[in-house]
Amino acid sequence: MNFRWFIYLAVVILGLGAGCTYESEQAAAPQSAGGAVEKEESRAKTVTTEVPLEEAENASAASLPELTPAEFERATRMYFDRCAGCHGVLRKGATGPALTPEELQERTDAGLAMVIANGTSGGMPGWGDVLGEDGVSLLVRFLRSQPPTPPEMSLEDMRKSWNLIVEPEKRPTTPEHGRNWQNFFSVTLRDAGKVAIIDGDTKEVVSTVDTGYAVHISRMSATGRYVYTIGRDGKAVMIDLWMEKPDKVAEVKACYDARSIEVSKYRGEEGDFYDRYVIVGCYWPPHFVILNGSTLEPIKVVSTRGYTYDTGEYHPEPRVASIVASRYRPRWIVSVKETGQIWLVDYSDVRNPTVKMIEAERFLHDGGWDATGRYFLVAANKRNSIVVLDAREEKVVAKVETGRVPHPGRGANWVDPEYGPVWATVHLGEGLMALIGTDPEGYPEYAWKVVRRIELPSSGSLFIKTHPDSPWVWVDFPLSKNETMQRSVCVVSKEEASIYRCWEVADYGRAVHMEYSMDGREVWVSVWGKMNEEGREGEIVVYDDRTLQEKTRIKGLVTPTGKFNVYNTAMDVY
View 1 (cartoon, rainbow, N blue to C red):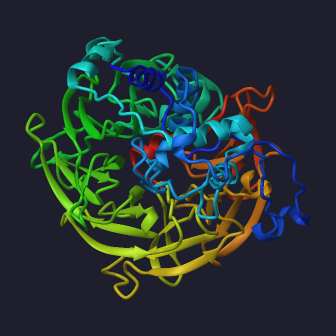
View 2: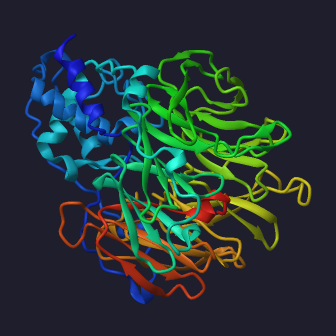
View 3: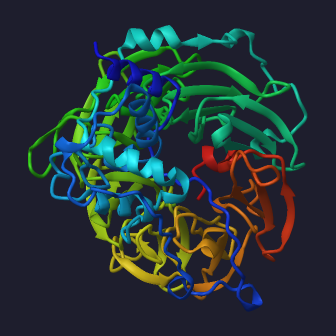
């Protein structure tokens, strides 16, 4: 085994997750009069990074000096932390293009350096300020070399990492505290490798739990008692909210890079599967893993490698993106990104699971339920569309073109005054909120069509959020190229179907991800700062949803990003 394999293994074990994510960069930008944020086009800035490029214009891959072990390790860390989520672990392309030496042979080193440093109009961020001149130059050299082959992971490997901290029979039978645990928030402290459990009533940090690098999501058990987290290092953690001080009771490393986790939520004629099993969807190795829902003991691993639905080409890296649990049958709905399939995984016989493969669309990513819980809407982001799956009939009923690179998170549901029930997404590639009709029985003429396109002041939105009792729809812009917009949120009036107000949440960092309190009266917004900037690491700003007035700030948090209210997450309220 050569040194590159060992370096790769060391990097992934350290938990450097793959993802097209931003490191927060703070730079002051004036706010426009009246608190409104000006249009992106009038304020956008292009970051230019000068990269030493002597001989770069005409350099060929063969003329580049081979990377030393130290350089290879550093470049591997940079790629897997910044690039692999969009371009693939094997660099064969996904949402972003392939980055193999063969694909890049017509590109000059200068051209590659400019793209890495400044980003593209298609949604790729510029990394010049983060990586620096030498980092950009090193990454160009790394891309000229052949991609390393990462290690696989067996069920036995997972079992070795499994840690049952508190056995089920030794856990409390009733809550050991008097708090309203259903209004707890599980908050990702991304760069700290922790999750904060915050009391939504008192705003106190009840517990801070070591979870692993860059937790991507928290999902609740069907009862809401347990929080299941999955990090970009592939580590799954189970947290018991009934403990006097909530803490983890089990953990396991299911892969080297992951994005999704879900529990079994079916209870009906085919059996009671509430919280019996957990599924983890992985980016690398490309597989999903079924775990015991009470202990996280690994039970079954299933590879997702296979053939693309449209061209029939073999793909070595079909990654698992979003996963939701059907309440109609004992099924998980699994989005297999690169092959463009939705897999219905039947867990009723967990050691012999059956998989129904449904042709959908390439590059499936994130998504959520409509208000009835029957239809799952998932973004095929590189195809600029939303795929609609009928969970009751178990078939795709529509593909809806929306806009450039949709990124809904879980989306947002409400009743439009003209078009009836709708589900909405925002977009990374353009300033657009697209509303899709979701009621084929009450409003058949609008079902599975974009009924409204609401212009937003910037591209770069990651999340959209609302609540059934709210008059507003909230959106963020953390990946905007405009620094003011990165720190801003906007609210859209459901009644008027237009922007009501936009404002900056903080004078540093990026405003990212909104979440409602259990009663729908408050909205929490993360300020994603930088771990090494004292006083600007991050905070959560709490707003009154009716008045849009700030209520309080929860400070002392290290790079908070996603927040998941226990009740809303367990009940799929969004």
